[in-house]
Image (tube, rainbow, N blue to C red; front, side, top):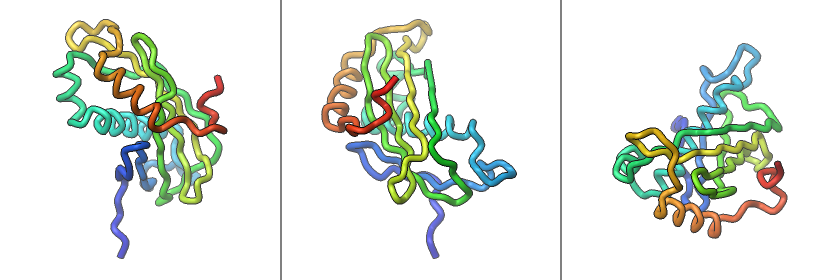
Length: 161
């Protein structure tokens, strides 16, 4: 009997998250509801940051006195997902700016076919004051290191607009 795992982190360089679509995430037509994709992205985003920072995310962010709310999210759908389907999300660092950083998350099926290309922009804010701040030095260093170690695929839609 195969164990049913709904989410599992497979690797750290690059961060790859494998998920299995739950029946309740699908509409009556048998495809994943569009809003569920944002939950998938947020989950991959949090797992990526925990992996990068090396500790539980909320503890680390409070200690560093900043938070990373999502400022922008875009999804480009290539295929649908169906109940019980396995897929993987691979996370890339697209850009690191003054107060924001942008990640690209590529969704692929078990054969490597693109399902969704997601872009998520996070803004750094002081935890208590809730105002924007520069990307903290340690996080900037980690993001830049990850980006150099895990470059975007050459034919990737993430570099376009």
